[in-house]
Amino acid sequence: MPSLLGTTVATNYLRVVGPDYSESGQARTYTGPFSTFGTRDLVFVKLTSVVADGSTAVNFSTNYLNSNSDFAKALRTIQNFGEVYYATTPNATGFTVILSRDTVNAADSGNTQGSTAAGSTAFGLMEAAIVSALAYGGSAAATMTALTPTGVSIA
Image 1 (tube, rainbow, N blue to C red):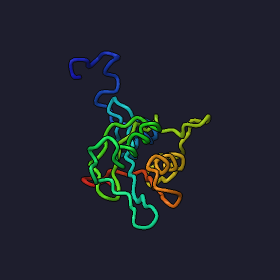
Image 2 (image 1 turned 90 degrees about the vertical axis):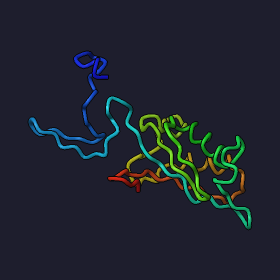
Image 3 (image 1 turned 180 degrees about the vertical axis):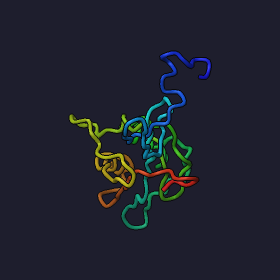
Image 4 (image 1 turned 90 degrees about the horizontal axis):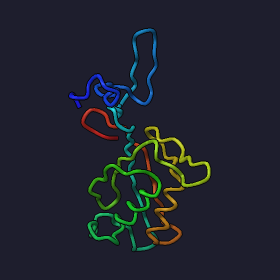
């Protein structure tokens, strides 16, 4: 990228601008965290607590590399709602994905999924689609929550 400095290709290079910023004269206040270093704005979202009736419980870590595992089914469903940049290795109760914030949608005519701000749980249509894809029955539930990376942790 340094070889492109001074060109329109590198306009966003070395620019630290969070998704929420304000201008005050010459000074800017950044409210980060930022993922817009000349790239798309990214959002971390965790999927947790998918539980089913009786003794049958979803376990995302069981054979998670298999193409028909619960992890694979959930991840394929998430890909129908947004562009996935990264998925963590799952544990038994869930996993985290990094999505392009501007592609997360509800797959409806309004094309809006709701807030992707930190702590948001406005992913109802995506959660319902995951429950349906896992096919564990009507009492299953999926919870997706937007996360905030801070320092060396993501919460």
